[in-house]
Structure formats: structure tokens, C-alpha cells
Amino acid sequence: AVGLVQDGDRIGFGGGNALWRRPLAVTRELVRAGARDLRVCNMIGGLEIDMLLGAGCVAETNCCHLALDEFGQSEHLQRAARDGSVQIREWSEFTFVAALRAAGMGLSFLPWRTAWGSDVARLQRWATVTCPYEGTEMLAVPALDLDVAVIHAVQADAAGNVALADPPDFIHDYDLIVARAARCVIVSAERVAPIEDATRIALIGREVDCVVEAPHGAWPGGVASQYGVDGEHMGREYVPATASPEAFRAYLGRFVHGGEPA
Image (cartoon, rainbow, N blue to C red):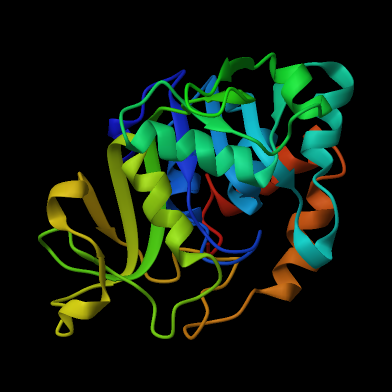
């Protein structure tokens, strides 16, 4: 699957909150493959982007927020902000979704009212447009075209159809927006099996390029209704390792490149 990702790609990730239903199995494979200069995107950045930052895979972040929920801020992002090693592009949630929707509709931008006059719009240097009907000026939020989207699902089938969790989890529909903004879609799933209830299908096979069965593929994060966040691993192993680049290299050696369970 990660062979579909090229160095320098703009890659969008799905998932709920920062530690929930994140495609960590695919993330670890990207680290193992030595991915470089990725332009990573997620409305609520979490564990997957944090790991890629720590592994030196990232050239640019596009997020509204990036942290580890109850385990605190992203030390990797803080270091990158201080030393300037990564370009950090900040978004509001509404404008981020607008940018993805524009990409999904094949448009170069969407006219938008929120963020008008904000530092987000100023720092992004967004242009403005005049509405031909009302004469009002609005932001022209540029499309965020993704080279690759990576999402983690509870279930998919061999034809590439992807089922929603039952019951649906937090911002599950965001995954659909990410997928439809990308030219290539990779789905990891807790299980690959026939989907008996067609009403649960959220993405159909022709929208998906690759399906990978990855039980516990969100670990050490969780998947609602399947398993919880591995708080012991996060608190004792992952978070302490983010204290320095050297410590995180040792973590990757153990849990990504090495033989310890992941």
C-alpha cells in the first residue's frame, strides 16, 4: 500500500479525535519505507502526524490542531516550530473542510465567509472574490488537492467498499471528505469481510485504490466499539520518547523497525 505514496506527496489522514481510528499501521509502514518530505494534512492532527514528524518524514503540516488529547501537546511539532525544519500551515476547521470540498468537487477554490479578517487568512495569503449576485467580498479558499488519502475503517470488503462503524463514531463523515479530495485512497481495516448491510457502506469500491486488513491498525490509539486507547503504552513508552529526537529514534527502533509488538 505505501508503495502508492511518493516522497513529497500531499497526504491526508482520516480519523476521529487525535487518538481514535488513526491509520497507525500504515503510518508505521511509511516510517519503515523511509518516506520523506510529506505534506501531511488532517483537520484534527493526532498520533499519525506526530509519529511522522518524529521520524523525520514531514516537510509541511496542514492542520487546525495537532496534539495527543489527554497526553498533551505534540513535542515534535513544538520543536519543528522552533527550529523551522517544517513548514506549518494553520487552518480553521471550516476553511480546512472548505478546501477539501473544493478539491473533491474539482474546483480551484470555494468562496467562504468564515476566517475573514483573521490571521489564518492573512498568513495563508488567500485571495478574495466578489459575489456576482450580492456584490459582497469573500475569501477564496484554495482547494487542498491530496495526492493520497489514508483512512482506517472497522470493516471493508475485497471490492474496496468501506463500511461505517456501527454506531458511527466522532466525525466519521470527515473521512469521506478526505477520500474524495484525493487522487489515490488507501484504506486499512480492522477486518476485510463481506458487508451484509449495504446501508453501512460509506465509500464504494471505485473510490478506493487499496484495501489492507490491519487488525488493531489504530494501535496504540483506539477504535470505538472495538478497543480503547493503550494508555499504558502512551504514558510509559510513546510520550516519554517524544522528549528528544534521540529518545524517539530509540522508540522507533523498538516499536516500528524492531521486533517489539506494535
